[in-house]
Image 1 (cartoon, helix red, strand yellow):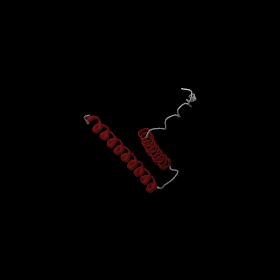
Image 2 (image 1 turned 120 degrees about the vertical axis):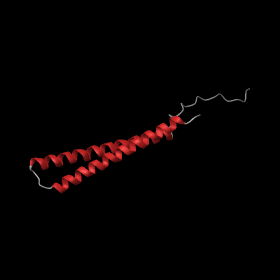
Image 3 (image 1 turned 45 degrees about the vertical axis):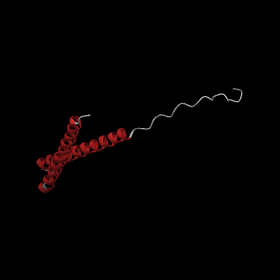
Image 4 (image 1 turned 180 degrees about the vertical axis):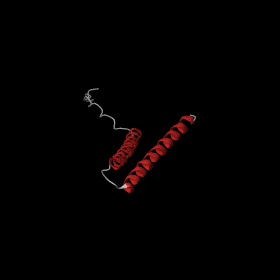
Length: 97
């Protein structure tokens, strides 16, 4: 017993790093947020273009139609991403353990 050294106090364990699942969830959330933001910006741009066209400020119908179609496509894409995410969630919930 005389040859044993006293135990030194150990440092507190480091904070655990974020799990890969949590990191993937945050990345997926960031992707969805950017999609929503982009779709919203395109919709607002299309609205401004149409209001300018109606106000007589600009006579370029072609650009207004392009802006409206881009906003429509962006919104459709966002809806499809949402639908796929819901389908994936429902599939996971149906899995038996």
